[in-house]
Length: 604
Image 1 (cartoon, one colour):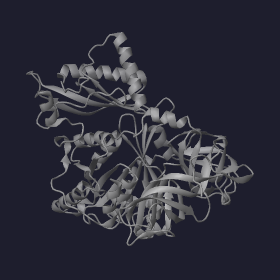
Image 2: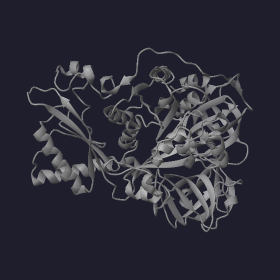
Image 3: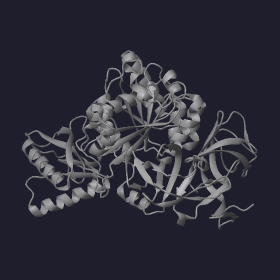
Image 4: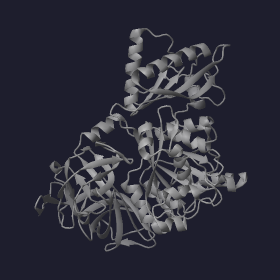
């Protein structure tokens, strides 16, 4: 698929017939639909739009099926509580219970009395583990009975035992003037916009951004949800610390620039901050214009799952909004994307979208809303509230057992605090008072430093775990020795750095031919530096859409890279993606530099 992402960059658009998947009625993965009926030879369970089967219950994951929970014995109750703890651990503090569903996924349903008793038991179980429950939706099912039967979907949520709330990072993409900052202002401040950009003023970091109304830097905004699924934001004069204390789930929005001249900042935000999801904002009145297609291509190239928000629907007629939706559907269905659009029109659609979006990479939810009138804004909040994390607890544990590695993305000087760095902990655990080394410097050295204090989402934090973003205070450490793209690692790691590396790439777009000697800006994680093409293996030149293994050399200073890391390079309209396949390693020692070549590494 990567080779066809070039269609998004090259401006090609192939129309595809048909409409979007709307709610549960479409043939979404996991829905079962008519295929399940034919396969099982039954017509039980569900009305016209309800699938008779859900996918069979998985051993792992945070979704639990229960046929009924009516008056369990004490032994059975203790077993159910243990089971809930396991599901909450798998979902990092969140679990979804489907009541009235057999383990094989058959939608049986319960009578009203049985459902009331089952929910009462579920509430007792949640109280036992210190969690809260929220009914997401109820659905009636047809069954061989005169009594109405229904299934209920319940969200169980608690703050994990380590008091670390669930944190999801969402990168916000879209063309200039599409309403990205305004939408974030409305979500995080709790007040609708006045139509002239009042909501976005709190998000801007520079005077020229306020004057022009255009974002040029990366800013972060937080939106919390408590254990009952209620929104926690800056309304009611809350501070960031109060939001963190009241929330069991946090959405961190990374507001990126839409204007083309700030494209390098947008790419840096996508590669460096490791977002879990991306939100592509499209203005209903302009449709797919400017950098929209390019941002869509970047999200696909970096394999970041994305959903789409069509904003400013209050400015347009219904026909204009529908035209923009159809335009998006065509692009999402073309071979370069191969996505299945899901238009969200109700709370039920939002719940379905959140669950299927996390399970299937091909589902792309589409929301139509207004930051001025507030139309459909609640549907987006329902979606964000239920959206599960991409990694489970086991993967998180494996990352935490590795040595500490922190990517330096931002550098500040704070009065009375000293030098502060912001970034993401890629692996391991970082604690207050820990000694680390930072580098590489211009001559390839790593320098010792001490972490004095940690802040996460603007509130103090003693321990930082893998995958979390934070700022670390380094005390009197000289700021001039630091730069973006460095890493802070455990001294035992013996980090590998290089100036020369090889990558298997796909040239997404180039006006003519890509040859030896060409200079490009390379993005690998938080590394951003100009590199020169030293060699194209097996070929003299590359054209758009072609693959090759290419040797690059950084022109300024060595960088810390890993084999397998995703790579994106650009120069003007030239763009390409790939992954690092080999390094010419430079092994560092505390007081000097020693060049060595390890087994299986490059030799020249």
